[in-house]
Image 1 (tube, rainbow, N blue to C red):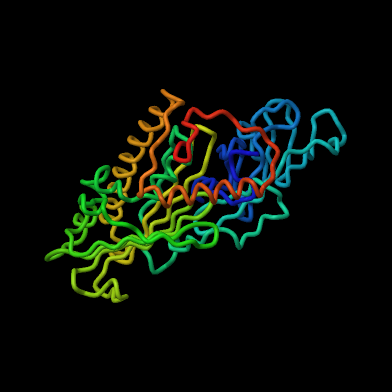
Image 2 (image 1 turned 135 degrees about the vertical axis):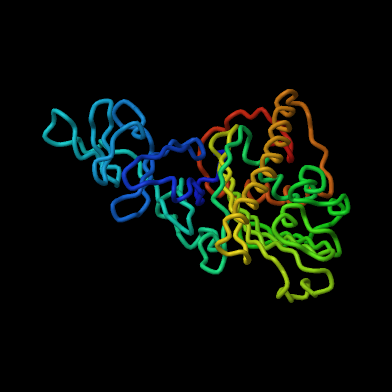
Length: 359
């Protein structure tokens, strides 16, 4: 069984990373990809490996909607078929590379690694806030992690760490860590809800929005396979009944984050923060983006240290706590999806501990 979900859509890139005339390389779940935008603006994804000698096509040359391998000159069209071999009148029928279903949806480029016939675009998580006209959005963000994707997912499924890892950025008193979230099952994932009433605004919001007093804060998010977070969060002056649905005085965010495995020991992390205020204000864009990057670097620091600690002792067994409820449930969903794939591929060894809470 593969360690990754095969029949699933993964975020592979931001739309700006794919250009009309260039080639872009990225590995997703151990599959090397070469991607580009065709002349109609649609994304193309091929396996980044020439069928002749295995040279990366991403080191090749764009010729219209085709790519030429610059090792021995084979030319492939956007379906992956070889249409030209130097010295031959016609390319052999078997000369082709794998094309993967690839879709641009709300600024994210998604790829499907499994059976092409199962690549249903309606299964792509809805991140429409990324380009919704009524929502301003921070610049698109990306981080590379040298850790297994499951450790990043764990972090996103348990926000109690805001009180300690992000005290000066995303904010959270120790009382926040004591909040027991509501956890609901939703299709392909979980919905997690936290409310904290009558508290100071988080530092990242206080930089761009003045409040005369305390606020009511919420984080309500869906976390769906393979590792996509879509969050409704915000702050409203205490006593304005935001919890009852009255948000006229609230600042709201719709955070969109995606964790995509690169390999067993590395991951891609995509993020942006749409909001309902300060449209067109570049200073607010910069401030919020800077705060996000600072906070997510805090995450990367602690998660990377955690991963290294696992690697030092394969016998270590994490001790589950009540705060682990969501991440344990999500790991079960991921394992069930991998079993459904039924892909007969051997497991790759992992340096993490063989535990329900290890990577």
